[in-house]
Image 1 (spheres, rainbow, N blue to C red):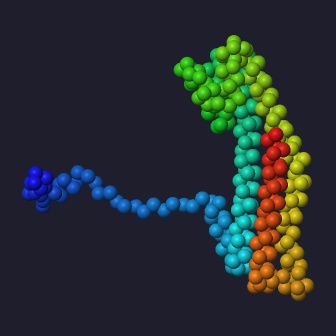
Image 2 (image 1 turned 90 degrees about the vertical axis):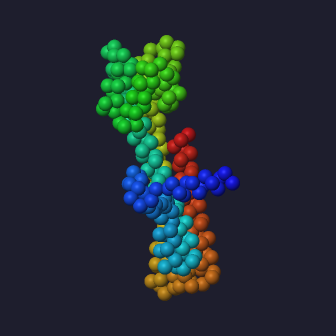
Length: 254
């Protein structure tokens, strides 16, 4: 009963007319803006590839083109990630070498890190600035940022080792790892190119068959056996490419 009385009193005293308009003016009316979520690029690649395959070769073509599109996208992303990783490693090695040069002339480690960070690569500059700020505040550098530079810094601080000597070893190790990765990539370039060429061989083979009047396109697009062979063949090709990339990645990261 008390709840009903309170609700009735609220209705009676609720402002109306001009008072209500003044109250509404205190809170700007929020406009509803629909959120359109953009699908990931990989999904777009698979969908577009599937649509193109459906138009050209039917349902089997949609599956086959979707698989090929996904594998091609994955290979490009892995290659891009590897290039960025190598660039970041090279930038960090150069920054550490400059850091060692600053330390060798008697500059304080924090000041040296901040100076080198001005001209360093963005990733290396972020590591140096974070390490310098953490050390200035008395924190644990390795726990704050991680990475070879900060672990070497913590090792030198804890055990009283010369920081310049430790970081010189870190710079040399980073350069050696970059050289090794590039050598492995250069030596496996032939194998990766051969795998790509073999994976693309069915395309000229189908075109050659069409030029001879064998009509392989009609078989693939309009027969159940052709659709099944199209899916199985594309899956095997994609599996071969993925396995080749896996072997190359193992050789690079070993």
